[in-house]
Amino acid sequence: MYSETYQVTVADLGYYEKEKQIEILVNDHGDHFELKTVVDTVEFEAQADDMFSAFQLLRDKMLKMAWGIMCNAARINAVQSGMMRDLDVVYLVEMGKPARMDDVHGFWDYCEMERYVYTAEQEAFRKKWFDSLKNQ
Image (cartoon, rainbow, N blue to C red; front, side, top):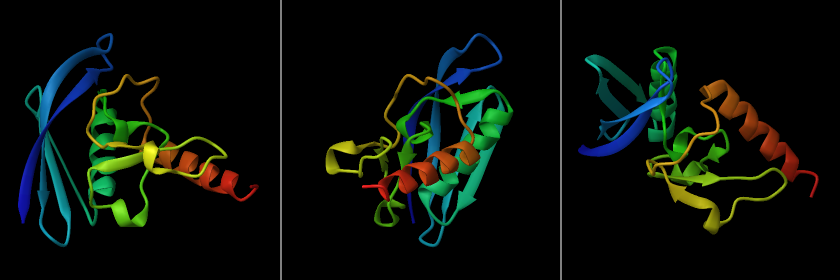
């Protein structure tokens, strides 16, 4: 088991998108990942078989409470291959273009968000992107 703490920026979506810094603790238990954080005394926690899935669960819980995570993994076009599911990197993909090594970005790296999306929207984008590659 190992633990890592990441400094992440979140936006208060209920209060004019005011930003603040939080820490997200990632525990790798070997057979699953656990993510934990606290925002204004509210605790958020999520567990899943891989880090990206655990992140998606955490992100959805935080969005329900009007907190948007400002990092690459939260972008609508963030996807991971099966081999990177436990790593702290994501591909930022474009429709019709296969993912390449220069599309790999740090999972937790800060980014300006155009919009905050739930996992269902991110998964729908991933499927649409994957389907767009079949036409090539």
